[in-house]
Amino acid sequence: MIQLNEIFYSIQGEGAFTGSPAVFVRLAGCNLSCRFCDTDYSLKEVVSVQEIVRRVCEIGGGCPMVILTGGEPLAQSDCLPLIEALRASGRRVHIESNGTIDTPLESDVWLTVSPKERLSKTMAQRANEAKLIVEGRVPLEWMEEFPVTTMVFLQPEGNKRENVALALEALKRDPKRLRLSLQTHKFIGAK
Image (tube, rainbow, N blue to C red; front, side):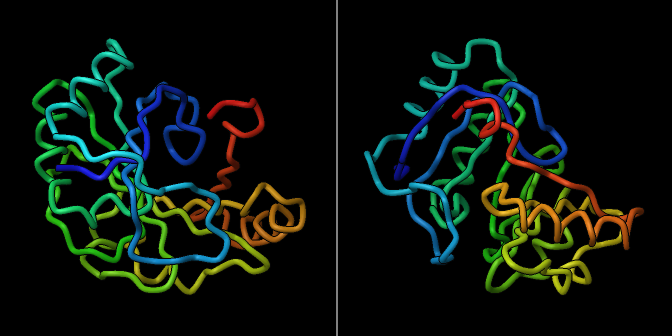
């Protein structure tokens, strides 16, 4: 059974797939409590893996991308069966994780790791992209944990002007490795 917050169809507003249609499955709960978290990941209902797949297909129709987010989706024991069921239904699965929980993932599962308090070396090595939250400072200390081939996005918390300025300064210092990721969905009023 999965502890669920919500399922909705929108666009990916962050990172490498910005602008891509996606069905979001927000799982409830997190193993961290970041003071700047802007996400309601409270428990709304408990449902089966099959029910989530059914809802994804109903809500998203032919949309191939499903993003598992939270909270921390990998903290739930049935997350791996959910990933497999979504893949079996023909969906491309993306995971948005804080990277603290070692979890084996198939190579076709896209992993975005956004480190906060701590980070598993295994998950950092597996990440397809890293998202560093800029909030009063640029947390570049996390970069050394990721392979040099991993895309590293700086995401200004809340799209706040002062955080954007900090991110832009860092981008100019390391233009080969860093990219900017604004929360595009918030600019256009999408969920």
